[in-house]
Amino acid sequence: MEFSLTLAIQLLIVALLMVVFAGVFNQIALRSDYIVAQDAVGQVSDSAKSAYASGPGSKLSVTVKIPESALMNSSYISNYTIDLYLASFGDVTAPLPFMVSGMWPNQTGTAIMEIENNGTDVIVRPALSLQVNMSNIYMVINKSSVSSNQTSVQLRNKMPVNYNVSPAIACSSALTCILNPGNIVNLDTTGSNSIQGYIVNVSSATVGIYAGHINFTAYPAVANPALPNATFILPITARVVQ
Image 1 (cartoon, one colour):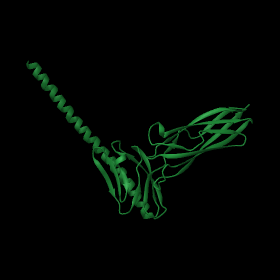
Image 2: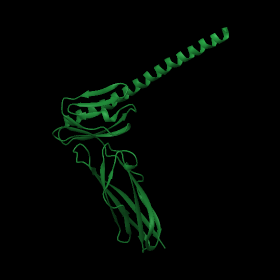
Image 3: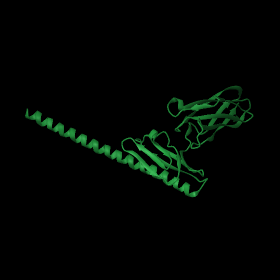
Image 4: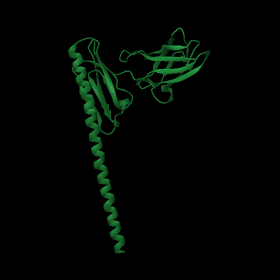
């Protein structure tokens, strides 16, 4: 009986210590997230002040880290305030003496923010984050008039809003290049709808090394001056052998 009572007391002490340590660890994590959020808001605020002081047309970018506990749907950049909302803390804000507009990215983690003074207010927005799964296409293909040599390209939207992407492919006159799909596609912000796959078919009846490229033009599905349009190019090199 005495042994059982002693064991129960020891287990209770261990359980209490675990609760205490868990609470301390949680407080440390919350404090760490708050410091990271404060730094992110401070960097964006300081960059916005620099753009405002430099006058219309000034642009700059800053890399920030957004803590995992940030709720991006509850965070905002508008009027005279830059706000980052933490789930277990609340608002981390920076008031500004001038108008600011824009938005945070839709995901936590490291983000590149672009800041621009357009003469009316200072726009803060995530740098265009449409990602391609390769930096270039290099193909070694057999001489043939049949378009049977293909590779796949994947495009992912990591912006906080839907984007339309208009692709176009152009190649040397010695190549026949086909991109599928070749029409405008809409990329959502999350899940499989945020990803678009493309098939690139290349053929040639002439031995040699030839070049081409895919031109992706991206713009917000709903026009928004606070969000960037962009064009980026994926180079194609095709080596045609006998």
